[in-house]
Length: 488
Image 1 (tube, rainbow, N blue to C red):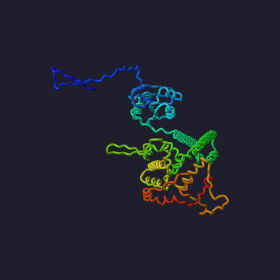
Image 2: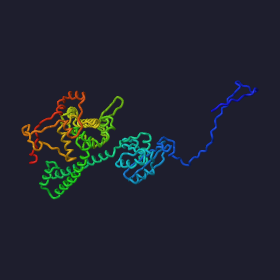
Image 3: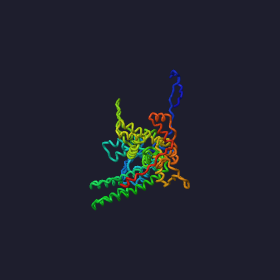
Image 4: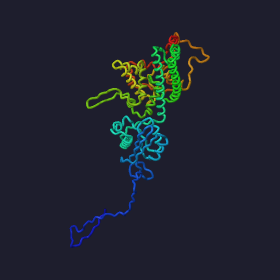
């Protein structure tokens, strides 16, 4: 805006003798050509920039089924711009959706289900991001009065646009494979257990009870020696054949899992914890994935559902049973591992026995499983083994893993050409190695010295002598197998 001074004549004298005229600058006229249809890809909205033009981010909600896929597309303002529905979910359909329905700046969301990870891998090359929603936490869908495929897809798209979507962590390809293998092994073990229970039920209906383990050769000889009719014999042999076939698959799977676990240093670190076997360690790693996504040990325990539920309002606070969130298979294996800790002479066993004196047995077992999860976080984060593991039991676990994975057995006893040393105890003796030597022989990182606070806690629990005994070798009588069981 500019000002011009205009002089006033004497007959029109004013005070002051000048007046101000406001002059607005004129802009040149430019015709604007408008398109008949709105061009959403050229809208000036926040989004990735390409060739000097801002592309609008669209939000695509997908309701996924085994043989049906329904999509709902929203723009940045929440307006519906497209919908689609396909009656098949295969590679060709997903590629068609990615090339014709989606854009590189789109964000896609779908709920976690059986085939969601395959769909995620198929759509990732065509869009900016693919998010997976937790169906248990998406209350806008779970508690909706009107629930259809179109409505579910639209709700997912809106939640993603507003940033209210409860997402789940997307595991990498190796973690997905480990999850599939561990779950499959658990189901095969369940099939073997079903065959064994059916076999015992068939015997019980004939007033017969086998005193041996059904998977042992002694039990098969006992069953073969029983006098039964032809129909019963056929039923028994049918279950035995099923057990043989399932056991063959289980042995092949265990061999492959052992080879993969032996080259993974995290498996060996977790196996130093009391009660954690190779399969328990791999199941725990399949659930955890990347340990760095948990900021502390309590976050990991909460993720696995081993923390008490809380109901709090005003001045009232109630703590109930565990939440049981996360993978139930991993939580079950941790509770089974905690069963074997009740006789452990270290801090974990002391914690179990002290808690069992004032709590029910199951409560104490779950509390020990919670402690195992906390220790697992520290072991994986610090890359350090457990300091209070029993040397002989830990050596046996790591040796079985090494032999099953590689077939390598280390020579024992005196070297060839040397005289055998006499027994240090009557009837034979056995040397228990120090814990540091066990870790060194099995290629496990050495444990660091305990901090001062931990040493004071050991002294309060009167476990200082136990901790010191782990650093020295011991000579104990050699155990001899009892042949009475096999002869009976």
